[in-house]
Figure 1 (cartoon, rainbow, N blue to C red):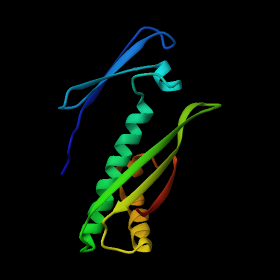
Figure 2 (figure 1 turned 30 degrees about the horizontal axis):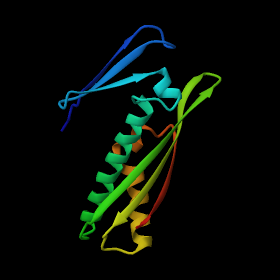
Figure 3 (figure 1 turned 180 degrees about the horizontal axis):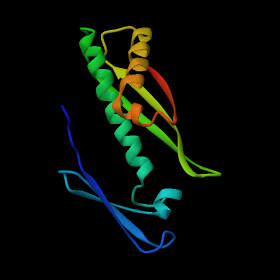
Length: 142
């Protein structure tokens, strides 16, 4: 089975002064971005924030699936992702993703939840995609 999804982007002008927008799939939501929204605390978004959102969402679903497969009643899973963009000698790299996840109302111990979260970190499709980055995890029950 293959599932295809779609997003697009357009950029206008030079990198320092130009602007762009990204359109997210079927929702058609258009999100502006610029160099300033990527390197400073300005309005708009940037690819790294979208990568973080995608990783947090995918990870939360993967962890929930693992909990369900273990026969556990599932509460909620809240995950945030901090993405590091780093300049190296050969250009910019996404070097790290730090996931923080909290289980709320889970029917397992904290140690079990952490073990399930580690498994989700290894099996989540977005984690696999970003395996060239260091992916760290802080997991616990809330």
